[in-house]
Amino acid sequence: MSLDVDWEKGGGLAPAIVQDADTGAVLMLGYMNAEALSATQEKGLVTFWSRSKNRLWTKGETSGDVLHLVSLAADCDRDAILVQARPAGPTCHLGTITCWGDDPGPGLAFLGRLGRIIDQRADEGGEASYTAKLLSSGIAKIAQKVGEEGVETALAAVGESDAALLGEAADLVFHLMVLLKARGLSLGDAANVLKARRED
Image 1: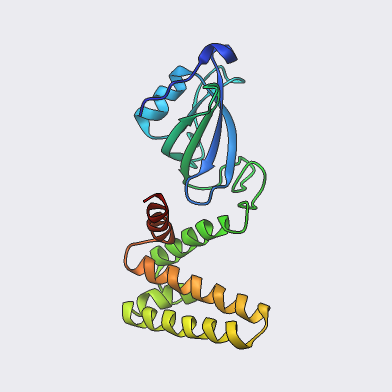
Image 2 (image 1 turned 180 degrees about the vertical axis):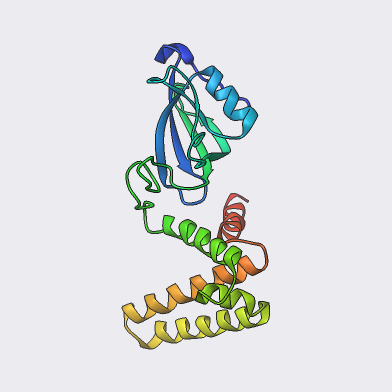
C-alpha cells in the first residue's frame, strides 16, 4: 500500500495514531519515519522510530504483543498517519488494552471486544463457559436461541420497561454474534453489508 507522507514538516518524523481495526479504540501514539513506514508495510507488523532508542522499534518485539497491520492512511495535511491494526495482546507496557487504560471507547466499540472474547472461548472449548457450551451444541441449537431471544426482544418492546427491552436486546445481540462465529462470520461482516447497502 502506497502512502504519501510529507516527512519534511516533522523533521523526518510523523505521528502515527494506532487504532484497533475491530473496536475503533485508539490504542497508542508513536512516531514513524520513512524507514519505519516501509518496515511496517513489508513485515505487516507496526514498526516505529523510537526517539529514545534512536532506532526502529517493532511494537511487541520483546513482549510478543505485536500489532498486526490492517491499513494505513495519511491525514489531509499528509503529516500524520492513521494505522489500523489488530493487537495480539495488551498494547500498553502496563498491561492495559490501550495506553489510556482498558476502556475500549464508545459503547459500540465494546462489540469488537466481545467478538474477541467469543473467539477466545471458541478456541478454548470445553464446558467452562456458557459461550463454549453454546458453540459446541451446534448451529441448530444456537439458531434456536437466536429465535427465542428475538421473540423475547419483540415482546419486551411492546409490553415491558426500557430496561427489560435493553436486557433482551443485549441477549439477542450476544446470541447473534455466537451464531455468526459458528458460521465463521462476525458482526463486523454484517456491518460491512449494511455499509455497502448505504454506499449503493
